[in-house]
Length: 263
Length: 284
Image (cartoon, rainbow over all chains, first blue to last red; front, side, top):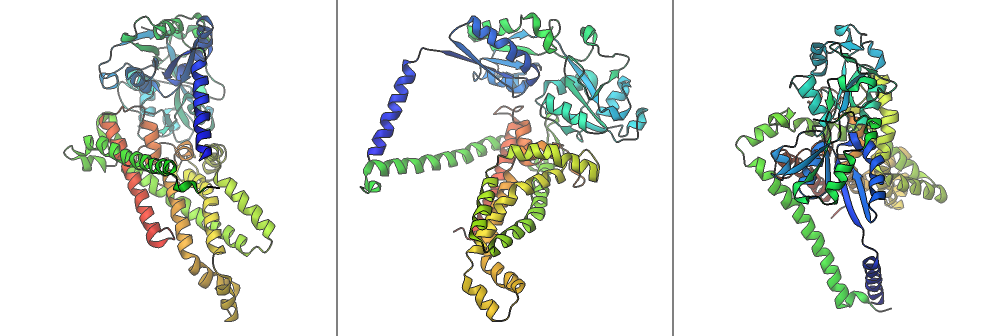
């Protein structure tokens, strides 16, 4: 039996050591993956200004960000979709906007199309057009790439770009912005959408209805997500609120594709 | 050394461990049933559930595409992996050098422990482009998922099959040879028949692993929610759809209830496999 007592003694020693450590407050941020780059850059600065606090950041999607902060499982949620009562359970949330994040429609260069009308983009994304030849491109089948239902970008695309229509159920679903970019880059005939302030290499960014995205005039681009940080109103002016407002006020957000102030 | 199993404290700890396991298992099933009931209790729930159209935002919860995806991908993996695994097992069982046999068994054991995300990553880099180049289409497909799964379950199948063949008494093989049977006849008519319970057991364990696999499949299958029209179509399985949509449906919503039902369907599938293993395999 001696091994059991040794194990118990060891556990008690470890536990007492943990109790003796200086107290550290931990905050957690969870939600939209599109803003993780900016948050990972800005959070260490807040930690430096607030000794004794540590902050963890994780993805999970916009809806998860709202749900988890409402249920008190994280301190700050990140989301680029408007919180619905079904997700918040009636909990009052305070919104801190992060800016506008452009949503670009990207295509494989082999499609031969870099400019479409609003009607054509709707037809392409909803599956009514299934060959690039029908919109003046190569003789290639259209391969639509989409994001999961939890994605804020998908919500913006369907509401603003497709006038409320749904992306085709034949779409291939990519779980993250990065996976979407890689898949469109490598799949001939692919079309997808990306939350990004710059046009990545290896794909073409579509001009839609006469609008062409330009990072120098990003606020003129009509398709954007409006990511925001959320904390519970009941958290008052505590560290979570301080963290959210700090993150919402840093000027270098535009280096990460977050332009202007979101409405 | 004292026989500690007769100590009261140790007995208590062991009983508590067993109780925790039992409560956790039953609690999981009960939680899934309670969650699922929100949907199952509705009128016309089953016709909605077994429809072929998944669009939760429009209250369409047809899980048929995912059931079809799970079955097709698992069967595809079996068709590819079982003959290869039998080949590996027979080659190893016939191997006379003990060192070589040991090395191969250890290598297979290591391969069974490779995390599935690595198979998925490899599938994304190699299998998806290969399917795209050879078969056409986007490459993300049931076929790609089947190939990745086949590679994943191959070491498991091979080990189980090899161990089953190793357990066949040498006297049976020698008796067969003494009666004039060729090595092939001995293999097919004696060794395989004698090893059948173990082979079946290995098959069912492999099927369970294939049916429950999520991450590797998710990375290459395409996640399409429509009913797949061919092996080269993108699709989704029960597990991949649960992971895709679990963050959008908080507990208490209809969508979450349907995800609970999908989890229950998977557990039911696993239960059937365990019963089959008990019936035809060597698990008792």
